[in-house]
Length: 236
Ligand SMILES: C[S@@+](CC[C@H](N)C(=O)[O-])C[C@H]1O[C@@H](n2cnc3c(N)ncnc32)[C@H](O)[C@@H]1O
Image (cartoon, rainbow, N blue to C red; front, side, top):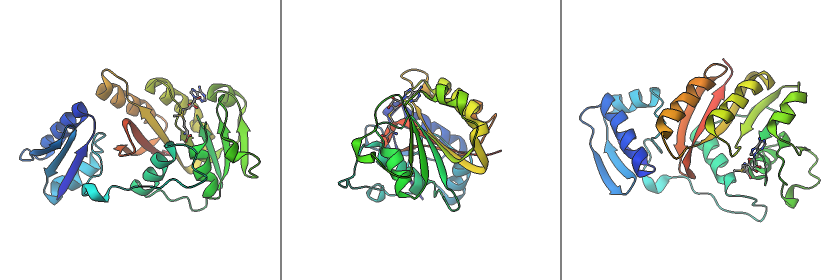
């Protein structure tokens, strides 16, 4: 089994260390800075999947099968690709979901993707959304911060999205406050923007905080944004 570790160079080293804790024989072959190829046994691969390593991308994928997405005429932001990759990588199933809350929605890439999936989306951001979304019948805009929105909102959603540009502990604390806005059986998807220093320790701290209110289903760096970790959360 070949595993690609593709990341910032520093993260690739940590990922290899994590792998070697499970499979001491595993050796990384450096393809280029920050990208390593590791040979693993099936058992080690399964163990690593269960251990939810946060800095291993594209586990079990050859590099040429990394998902690529095309811009269409409605394309709003590169962030759309992050969300599409998360849907694919985590096999997110929206069956029965009707409503989404999108925190840090501007300029509107994630909102657009969720509208296209047929959900009613509440887009929260003090910044402006793209004109391309103007007048969409399933879009509710809240031009304010997530914290302001949270003080007023009581009705729960099927899925919470959070792509706010924010310190990861602050963003995770907001997710804890938001937990009551998630319906039982719902999902939350958020990005943790990796801090410049002590990012491994801080990301682990953020995940531990999130576990107070959610089940962590996945936490992975994705190809379409290597400077963040994408986290899929479920209700406890
Ligand atoms: C990376 S952009 C989001 C991109 C978006 N997901 C998309 O697909 O187009 C981060 C956004 O977080 C927003 N943001 C930062 N702090 C926020 C807060 N406290 N409440 C709501 N939005 C916030 C910023 O205004 C910015 O638009």
